[in-house]
Image (cartoon, rainbow, N blue to C red; front, side, top):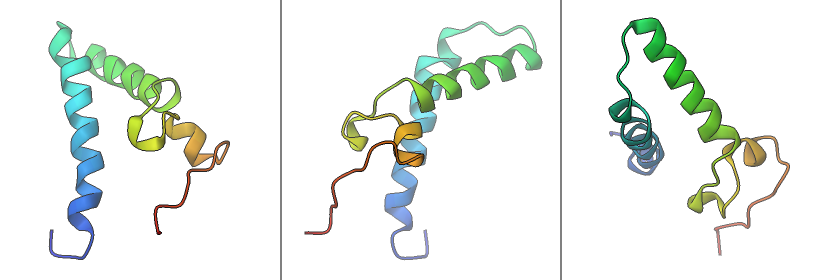
Length: 76
């Protein structure tokens, strides 16, 4: 956290890890590291491709990343 803007970059990552923990990891009873890895991969796929995000104006991260949709500019 020693550079300008680093705290705001961290917000998105912290939000993702919280979602992963509460929506996937804490709800499952994984029996092996392989099963855990597969569950996390499934959740990341779901998170990036199918779950709309409020901070992205209810678009998916994949749609924004591939520029299928354009977000309005926040610099006003």
